[in-house]
Length: 152
Image (cartoon, rainbow, N blue to C red):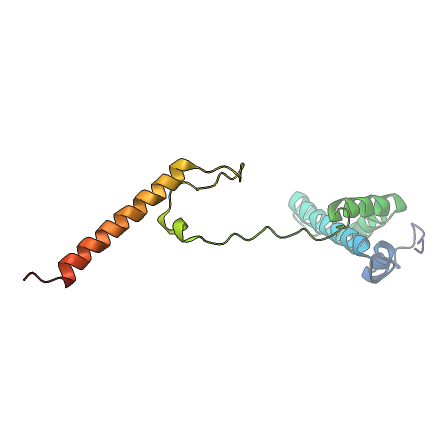
């Protein structure tokens, strides 16, 4: 990173500032640090306008840019960017196992298998589903009798 003397105001254009934050194009931490710097610049402009009622002058912005591009501030922005980016992922998380919809699940009610104990049967859920199935069979037989069977 090239150091610009604090008194050299003309060299503080956007390209030079971006080059200070992200020397390489493939530097995600530097790009995030530059984005944090831009957010601070926008906040400075809005706070200055709120307090004084006028937009900041070019000299005020240059003073802000000089103070924000010191090596200590650059290191602080980079550290904040690294913290926000977090550690690189080691491997992608495995997807959750897909559960197939069982035909008994249509009737609703409590689950037949306990989620925390997959080897135990939830008898209440099983009896509920069997009762619903019995009611469905009875209703179907009554409807068939009424609709399709003719009395002699």
